[in-house]
Amino acid sequence: MLEDLREELARESRYIAMQGLVAGREGNISARRGDLIAIKATGVRMLDASPADFSVMDLTGRVLEGPRPSSEYRMHLMIYTASDAAGAIVHAHPPYTLSLASAGTWPSPSTEEARLYYDRVCDVRRLPPGSEELARAVSEAASSGCRAILLRDHGIVFVARDLKEAVDGAVAEERSSQVQFMSTILDLLQKIYLSCGNP
Ligand SMILES: [Zn+2]
Image (cartoon, rainbow, N blue to C red; front, side, top):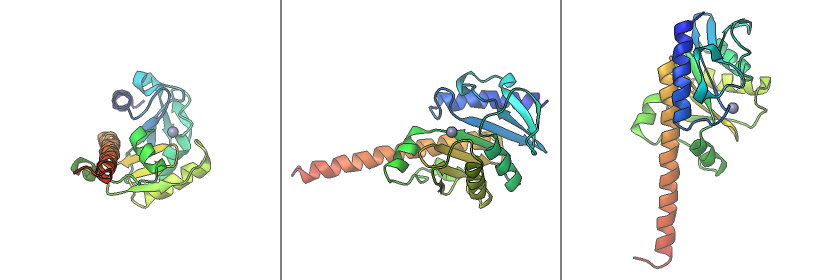
């Protein structure tokens, strides 16, 4: 079932890993077609993903084909159920975005590319990965129209109309955070330099 979609998901999974948004077995990805979704299986490295590593589920959570889905499947299902505009979801652990948030500098779309995909990064408090509470909190943020949702000390969820948009949006978000991170550091270094009496 959904062979072409699973093939596309596998290709995009590998791309996300190559962009540095996940490492090891981190992260997951899914896309919806009608009342069905295809989602990455649990324990699979995104860098190695193949079409057989994706499960097909209905929106009630029944697995129709393939291996056991990601432990975050509830979050994906709740987002699709809560938001008709959601056609694909990327969940990653991007280091620059997480660094900014944990240092108290909120990530925001700092580049033109990023602003094509999202207008703000929404905040979800720290909740256990894979839990129903986390799934509910993220789906509430998504149904309020937020596309880039930060899960404190954990990662980001990017929700979009289709798979390309979700992947490119998640990558643009992390690159924007990288620019924000580096410009914050450079700005600080300049201030230190000037405060030392340099011209
Ligand atoms: Zn995660």
